[in-house]
Length: 157
Image (cartoon, rainbow, N blue to C red; front, side, top):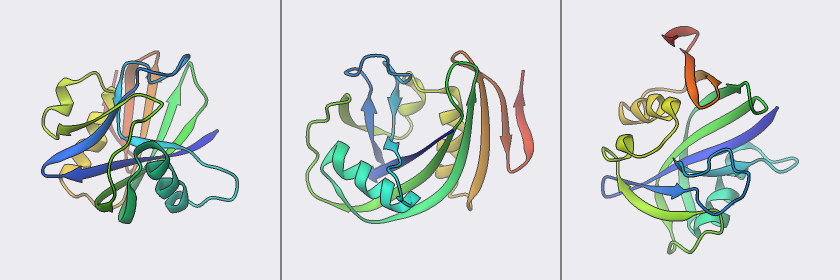
């Protein structure tokens, strides 16, 4: 089991996205994802989120909203608990990232990029400003086979 954070940094109707094109053996290879990474020992979700955003982007979060948790289950990778954050309150300048290319992407255009199917679900929850949510996403390979939002099945193949 792995704990990670994922932060959707917003400015002018755009999210700062990371096109994962630089790391070998990356389960997110060639996908567009929000900013985040794995917890270090003793970190809270908020501490991990702040550190990962700074390490990957050079930006300092002044505040961030903890939006929900995604349980990512896969037949290929370890189960992952992704703590989802949103922030429009940050300072600094975006730097070069060694994990991929950083780019400000219009929120509506993200859906047409190569992203995980389940990401579309929590992106819509962020757009609706939903209260704290629990989302379980089950994948076979790269295909979403089941999604459960707050203990209710919303997608099942």
